[in-house]
Image (cartoon, rainbow, N blue to C red; front, side, top):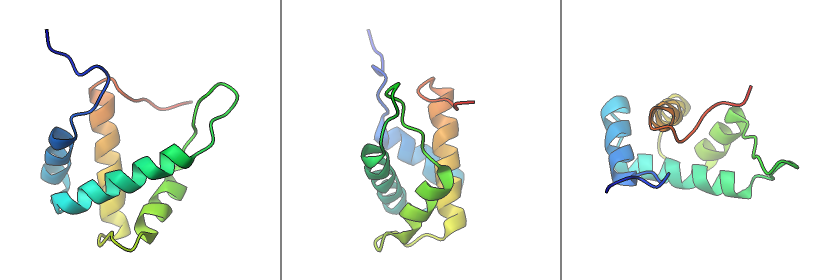
Length: 95
């Protein structure tokens, strides 16, 4: 039996994002790494949920010295990633 156990196949994700955004896969991996760091450092609310402000996340990633992509490309990568995660049933938006 195969399943993703709620985990993302990063190689598949990077390949999908590279195809959609035409960005360098190494830069996409950096964006994802910085995104994960930002999320891991975010404070959860009383329900254990972490509310991420997409503008704050975008600013944080673009400010990283090793990220050589412009803001629009980073935003496109993050949006494509969210679409991918939603399509896999691994993420959603909070109303």
